[in-house]
Length: 402
Image: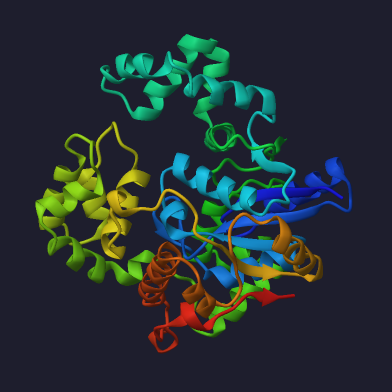
């Protein structure tokens, strides 16, 4: 039996995610076990997850995943390179995962590994610096630098978002000298941030827009059954949808209370961006206005959203850990519990099933879970019903066993 690993957000889970699961087992064998490394309550684009992590993990297990482990916050709400490194660290630390599987626009694992190698080459930094002088975005400069090394056809792989993330996965595997091999499945359906199209897998962003707008019924009809059930239960309990806009005044108050030095600590080495955000925070009365005022051609909205989120949660890059301190279990089925039993002998990190058990672990582990707990307390304040937002949820909730 092989064990595949998938790095996920499931924000929300959709039919494209089910397709990837089906393809993994079609290619590796029907008895392939699947372990997922999943973002917690905050996601990579610098936003609140639409649904709290334990319920997204439950939907994943009820949809065919065997075991869901958490990507801790300092990696989950981070740039693509750090997000990918966090997911790979989680999967590698289990000691069980043979294959890392993910969707991509190109469906060519060898090509993505080639691009990853180019990005890690000695020649690349000088080429990137040269391209950045043109004043374009980092992404555009990086693409041209890779094109100079490998040719425009290969460099153009970095235009598509899932290819980009796949390249970061490959970089993380190379950097950690991982023995995991790569399986990438050609993405089908709507683009990463695309609109809905008949007969295709919808994108998560399109589903979020529908669920939080006037298309709730349509979106619910497109969700996999387990994800739909989890959403409806959370909605009925006043815990969904979770939107950053619900905490808008709290976020703006936090930003207005920060000094220029506080903003500089959020983005060390980035010329001018922290200053633009500081100035925008003095005058903006909405988060949308804040982001629009601070935005430049060189930096994407996702970077600004992450900086705002980190400010709200009290995170700074200088204080972020470089290595995982534990493996946190979010959900498991019967086979997932068998995998956990094997991990007692194979895992390179402590496996945390009961939050209180962190007190037996290292100081780094305790500080990391305390950070998760503080951040979850802020996350719950975005629940539609504040009566459901009591503090301390992180310490009370254990894994979902299906």
